[in-house]
Image (cartoon, rainbow, N blue to C red):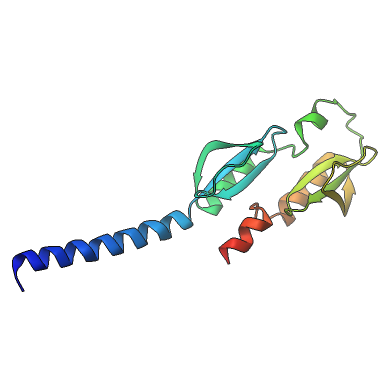
Length: 148
């Protein structure tokens, strides 16, 4: 085999391996996104950000993204509910949407479309603790299914 053939074979092999490795690494990369209600989510990095959501600067593996959200998202109520300045004694329901994403909603206020109550209710702090305990994968279910 000539020197040129070796170089071409090496280049071809490197191109294939390099591309495959880049695709595999990209598949394991995630980003933190936030919506107008200051609700957070984790999406696969390669997924285009949809209307109503914007990228934060946070990117990495699932653990890094979840740790960031755990640190900054301490209230978990939509911004519109936070702005109501409700009493500390307000009773809330933990709610979940069709994408299996959680939030906290006042029990006495009608839920928005596509949300339903879970079995958990209480004051704000216990609701936040409950969500942090049960919502271990913050990716929308539609994206989790694509990854399988």
